[in-house]
Amino acid sequence: MHDRHTRRFGLGTATCLVMGNIIGGGIFLLPASVAPFGTVSLVAFGVLTLGALALALVFGRLARRHPDTGGPYVYAREAFGDFAGFLSAWSYWTMTWVSNAALAVAAVGYVHVLFPGHASRGTDLVVALGALWLPALANFAGTRYVGAVQLVSTVLKFVPLLFIAVVGMFFFDPDNLGSFNAGGHSTLGGMSAAAAILLYSYVGVESAAMSAGEVRDPERNVGRATVLGTVGAAVVYLLGTLAVFGTVAHDKLVASKAPFSDAVNAMFGGQWGGTVIAAAAVVSIIGALNGWTLMSAQSPYAAAKDGLFPAAFLTKRRGVPTFGVLAAVVLASALTVINYLTGTSGVFEILVLITTFSATVPYLLAAGAQIYFLLSGQRDKVRPARFARDLTLALAAFGFTFWLVAGAGYAAIYQGVLFLFAGILVYAFMSARRKGRAGAEPEPAAVESP
Figure 1 (cartoon, helix red, strand yellow):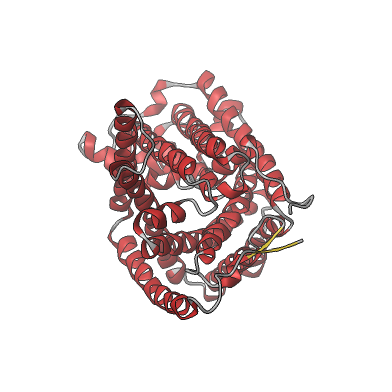
Figure 2 (figure 1 turned 90 degrees about the vertical axis):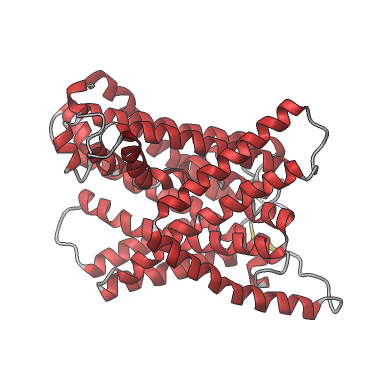
């Protein structure tokens, strides 16, 4: 029974969940990161956006077929069995808590801009841990509070970014753009090099599908929220990057550590742009952490229902799988402590590489599942035109995700595959326990406390 702290997400909140999870802290540095390649990077971003939209549409189709919490895990297991489902859930779970630690560390840099002074490693650690635990507390309070935080934080970050994107067009100077292909590559080579940096900009498109069980009328709203959230993020990304390219001189942009701040200062003069953008970045990261903390619990919750993750992950309170939230925030906190106390980023960097690859595994399996469903005849009688369209979208989504894997680089794939294979041990243990219990007692049901 739902209590007053549990409120299923409507279309607006589900859209904000998608948009808020896609737009984290990376957007604030992206224009400077791709500036060395020239404006060909904008073309690369456009192509990537089409791939992300194909993936978003595929998630919408899959959610209509299986409107259950767990999204990619549910689709992979339904299509390919327990092992594929487990690999999807394991990869996604890993990606969420490690990337949460990375987001918290990124937030510290922006807090320094807001409160300049002699920061110590201890202070930075406290700030990073606060960035992890505040969103976790919102999650413990229930879906009603998760939705409220997501709605407010998405508006607070979307408005200033959209403002710069739109107003920047009035200050746009084509002379600032530099050359089309500035990196010395061929046009295709420049696009690929820029794309390798931009590829992970759209991770988060699956957010509404992952929380489908918490969305009102998921058969309709998950697909709509996924596409609307992805389009909203794309508008901010593409127009924002174009505005920065057109307002900050190319040679300055290449060396910029805060491109959106430089754009505000170029438009209006003074140095206040840094403070405004740093505040927007902190809000953006906290909002992303709020959404990703919920995501970190949904995949293991769905897998635990099928006996593929420990039963503790079934503990659910006020619509939120609380044990999953706790496990993820504790692991992310431990990783953050290691990052600051050891003073070396070696372990941290390896784990960030793991997430780069881990994000692609559930996407590949989900796109593959949609192709399987379409080709195996597991569909209602549909017109050939619709079948062709759905199959084309699924193949485009698979191709886009394959490109993500290729862009991850050798180190990320190497570290990621090792961690993926380590999951086989967990699967073996859980599978053996489940077989041992078969017939002895029924599968555990979700534990919902008031």
